[in-house]
Length: 332
Ligand code: 13P
Ligand code: SF4
Image 1: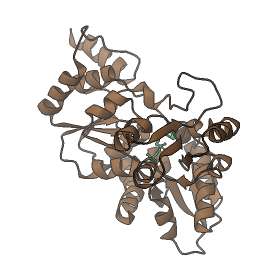
Image 2: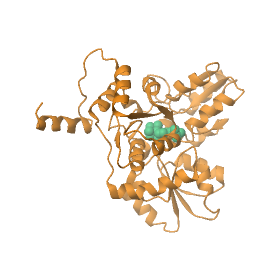
Image 3: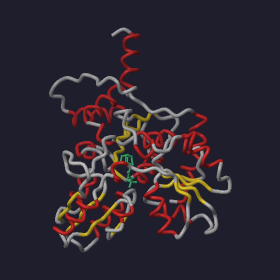
Image 4: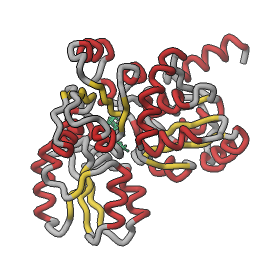
């Protein structure tokens, strides 16, 4: 291929417009393992990734553990099997390393619900407030934050401020409402939400619980308050796994993205796990994140082969966004 054509093709791949052709019957597991070694690459995957990706990853975790792992890796290339804000955070922590995202279109409805210009005006209207942002937001939003948090450390982060400190919490109103109740604060909440957790049907959930009264409902705090009210335990993906592992209960209805069940089944193979039902009838009758599921083994392989698409953050923005991320890591 001549250089111009190659550049054009790489450009298309990096923008996610082109699905690179790969030979038939390729053994993705073998090839990805080979590329990992050849390129000194590490694959970091979120629990919501498809099963095969979780299985081939070097590290699978919740958003906090993934950020912590990205902060300490000595790999030359970080392949982020997750969504854009996660890869962006890894890049901010590793500005000199290449950070790959198998599909650049893997965004996040929650991050999208917080446009920077609107958020800037919101923070400027409340200059006496500290700004705590959930990690599920863009780098630009992080530059306007005092500290970032994840669902795994949010209570601790909020409690690091004096009780009378006014706080803006963004972008997740459900997590923010849950945190207000947990900490007894009255944080000003941005009106954003995750479409995956908003999609749970309370009617179907209650019917399912009536069918399985011996099951405990466990839920992610991105779920709306009416879902959280039914839950015996609320926690991040890692928190839900730990609870299912350590609880004496034998049966759980799990209200978070269905990808978590892959690791949960591995960890508690003796227990019964039922995904919480979504409003819409979809393929799994549960709630799946269409963004997370854009990454596939084929895209993982081609992105490692071509080292594209990679995630870039303008150096000035990265330097500003690093401060609240580092503050979070220090407090965790
Ligand atoms: P955690 O894995 O940190 O619980 O986050 C869930 C989520 O929605 C990630 O996008
Ligand atoms: Fe965003 Fe929700 Fe998908 Fe997580 S599950 S990436 S918060 S849309």
